[in-house]
Image (cartoon, rainbow, N blue to C red):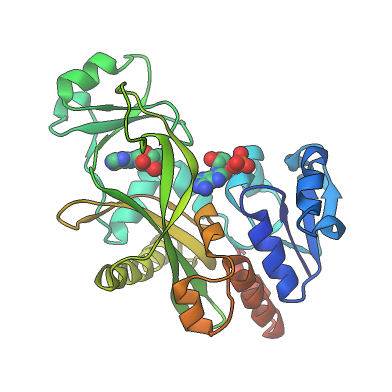
Length: 319
Ligand code: AMP
Ligand code: AMP
């Protein structure tokens, strides 16, 4: 089997890791990005596509596809769920990520503390962040200090998700659930930097939360223990609700407030771009493996072990 992905988001991470583990690789790349990926020595892996959703029509039977943030952004969750791509991970999780109700159910079932949610603007009793339904990437959000301000900013014809606004530090922790080693590894942490919510000076009340990039973070070790347990509980929570596990990388997206409460507002059941920071290794992956081990390589190592054990199918869910 080959390892493949689409040329965007964390493709350098994934493809370089697969090559390091001796896999043949495929990088589905648009012509405008070919020169960029060639400059990293990945020319031989490139299969040109005009648009990423063309991969749905190609013969990819011998490719283990590693999904990342651009799959949903450029192909769409619906098409991915219906496709017969050999996707590493559990694609059912896409549904839980997309649907605000399923999402909260999973986070609560996993024992995670979540920001308070308001079904109606009349119940608002804290500062809030108001998320337009279907909005992605932090666009179309606004914040309000109280009920009156929120109501004055809301369009009565629009559907919103209203959440307590948690003041604190945005902490994204990535994990790796290894079926082969039967363990959950905490892989690394980062801070997502967003314009212009993270700008020092801003003069409007409608900051944009569009991601610029990620900053490395090493947590207090006592805090890391808490995250380790959250990761384990998250996988257990999903298994309880869904019946199947989450193979491979996943991320829990949180805000830590001044009392050190950890609020989870989001998760991703796949590699996240924050792991790009940790090439060639994170502090924790170095301690676990005693060698350079970035997320792309970690994925390939796992797949190699599963193939050797004839257990690859367990990691391409649902069955
Ligand atoms: P791009 O190829 O930069 O357009 O990104 C593709 C998708 O991945 C978009 O939905 C982005 O919002 C998301 N994305 C890219 N980089 C990051 C990041 N560092 N953190 C979170 N999401 C990201
Ligand atoms: P989301 O689309 O839910 O991933 O949120 C995008 C960004 O909005 C996050 O990265 C945070 O900066 C911010 N955000 C989301 N939910 C909250 C919350 N409950 N409190 C404070 N900030 C939030």
